[in-house]
Image (cartoon, rainbow, N blue to C red):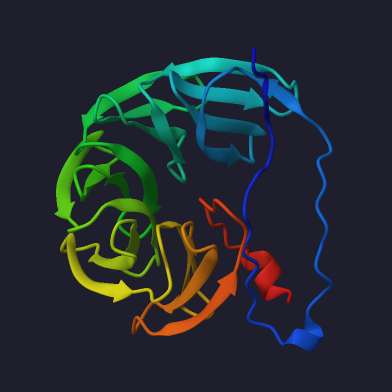
Length: 264
């Protein structure tokens, strides 16, 4: 029997806009506790800081971990090869993606009550939320598209053809979204209002882009390249290559810490 523990395992890219002399010493990280989970695969993870609850995409559904009681609920919400677990800001709702059934599930993350099962494209995986448009975007890897979901309506309201296999995406909150195309080593630029891909940014030296995030202060996109063990820094306005940073092996997600950057 294999015991899998929940922990923070990631290849980190630390990016700051401050001067080198002003930067604090690189922090050290260590494991302080292990909370056993069930056998099987794990995918995306999200944390509800207000309620101290962690949600994890699992093979058979959404797993819930109460950080205060350490209680694990394996199938808090049933699913089929769940990848993303996306909180909808300002609401109690969460969206999970089901890779096997080509659907997304909209549910109450407090009670687990399902609000809607939403058809997507083929192979839904990652998902992100655009606060300006109040829309969620589901990345359909095999469908080479993104499904646009209106959480308030509980339904899909559009499909965006991307011309490549989408992995992860991020919104700049100002009308544009940026989606990594895993098989093309490019970033698709999406106009949120028209729901169309309007440009593609190439990433020289990048193989298998996975996670992506956005720094609003510098307008830079940070894209993790799993196959080449680097992160690319791309100007979100022009698509210009702003640099390459060496990272660890098997990188998947990227998280930009704006609070740490502001204090750098």
